[in-house]
Structures are given as C-alpha cells and as structure tokens.
Image 1 (cartoon, rainbow, N blue to C red):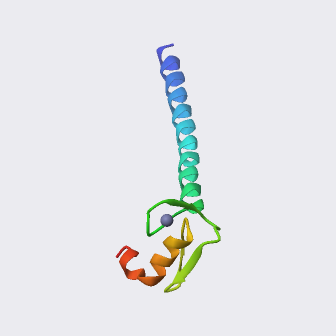
Image 2: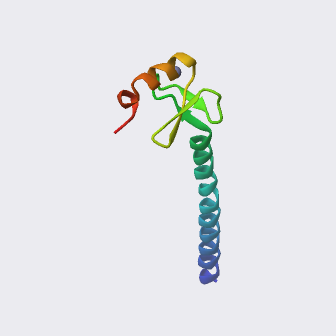
Length: 84
Ligand SMILES: [Zn+2]
C-alpha cells in the first residue's frame, strides 16, 4: 500500500514538472517579442517601436529614432552612437 502512495506522489511530481516546463517557454517568447518590436534610439536611448518612420541605414544596419533631431545627430556622426 505504501508503494502506491509513493507512486502517486511521484506521478504528481512529474506532472507538475511538465506543467512548469510548458509554462516557461511562453515567458521566453514574450521577451523575444518585446525585443523584436522595440528598438533603442542610439542617440537618446529611448525605446522606439519597430517600423517607425524615422529610420536610417548605416553600414547595412537600420537604426530607428524617436525624432528627426535624433536622426540628424546620428547621421552627422554615426560612429559616436554605435556600440562597439
Ligand atoms: Zn531620440
């Protein structure tokens, strides 16, 4: 009889583990989505939505900006704002 109790606990433990593992990837996906939809303005470090109108390309990389003045500052001196 004791064995049955142990087996029940064991099965329950495994099930809970599986549920926990299933829940985790969902949290990771959320973080990935946030990274994909939000870019950082390299000039003022504000978060900018991807697909904005104020963008520029520099060395095949696209940069997004919160405003025209930020874009202008970047275009004048891109190397100053690019992380190395
Ligand atoms: Zn800005």
